[in-house]
Image 1 (tube, rainbow, N blue to C red):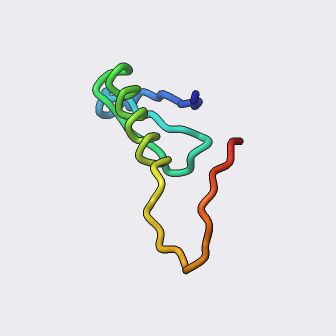
Image 2 (spheres, rainbow, N blue to C red; image 1 turned 60 degrees about the vertical axis):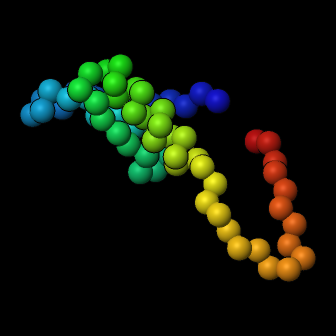
Length: 66
């Protein structure tokens, strides 16, 4: 799956900030563009990882494709 990310240089630290506009709060950074892109890939994967949930008896779990 492809996600749009925005890379921005930080003039104070010379690092690169990176964020995904479609996933609120999903941000990362790196010392260079390549590291920032690697880090945001991990951040996106963690953001999208389903959290464990407790279901009531009789509940059904399904998946949908969007």
